[in-house]
Image (cartoon, rainbow, N blue to C red):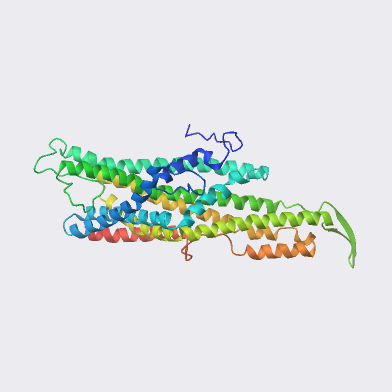
Length: 430
C-alpha cells in the first residue's frame, strides 16, 4: 500500500493535509523528536509525549558533552580511524542539538510548521482551479514517493550502522565468552560514561540499548527535518507554478475597437469598465497569493537559517571524514560507512537541488508579471501592475542566516572542499 500512491485529494477520506500517507509518516516521525505542531493543529498531547519533551533536550546535551569528553580522554589512545568515526557521531549530535534547540526554544518553528499544514499545503488551494488541482496531485505524488525514498534510506543507514558492531562482536567471539577477562565489545557510538561498557557484558547491554535509542532519535532529527524542509519547498514551488500559470494565462480584452491615428485606423484592445473591475480583482488575488508565498519563504529563511548553516558546516567536515573511513576499502568499513556516506551525499544533493528548482521558478515570476496585458489596462490597474512588478524584482530565495545561498553552487563548493580535505587527511593518516 505504501509503495503505490492512492491518495486522491478529492477523495472523501482526504479531509485535511494530515490524511495523506506521506503526512502520516512525517507526523509519526516528528512526534518522536517532539517536532510536530500539536498545539497549532489543536491536537491533544499525551502525558508520555510531554515527559519525552523534557527528556529529549537533556539527552541531546548529555550525548554531545559525553562524546566530546570521550575524544578528550582517549585522543592519544584510540586509532585514527576510530577517532574520525567518533568525530562524525559528535558532529551528528551537534546538528541534532541545534534542531532540538530550535524546536524547544523557538515557538516560531511550530508556528511555521503549523502554517505550512493549515495554509500553505496545496491541498488548501486545489479547489481554486483545474490547474491547481492537477498541480496539487502532482506535488502530493512526488512528496509521497520522496518520503518513501527518504524513509528507506534512513532505515538502511540506521540498520547497517548499528548491526555491524553486533556482527563484529559475534565474529570476534565476544558473545561466546562474554564474561571472559580479555573480551572487548564494539559499539556503534562511544561516550565517556562512568562505567565500563567495552569489557563488561552488563555495561555492553546497557550501552547497546542506549545507542539504539540515540541512533533512532538522531537519525530522525537529521533525516526527517530535511524531509520537512523539502516538503515545504515542494509546496512553495507548486504555489509559484500556479501563480506563474495564472499570470501567463491572464485574460485579454474580449473585444477591440478602431481608433484613428496619423498612420491610419488601428485596432486597439482595451478593457471595458466591467472588465477592468474583474482585472483589478484578479491582480489583487495574484498579489495576495505572491505575498503569502513570499512571506512564508522569508519566515522559512529566518526559522531554518541557523540550522541550515550548521547543516552545511556539518557536511563540510563530515563528508571528508566519511570518505576517509571508506578509503580503508575493507568490508567492515564499506558496510558501515559506505551507505552512511551515500546517504549524507544524497541528502546534501537533494536538498540543494530542490531549493535550486524553487529559485529557477521564482526567477520566472517577474517575466510573467511583465507579460501581463498592461497596455490594455486603465491607469489604475497599470499602477497596480507596476507595483507588483517592483515587488517581484527580489525573487523568492532561501539564504542560511541571510548570507549563504542554499542551492547547487554551495553544494558543489562543499563537495569540492570535502574531497580536498579528504586527500589531506588521507595523507596524514598514512
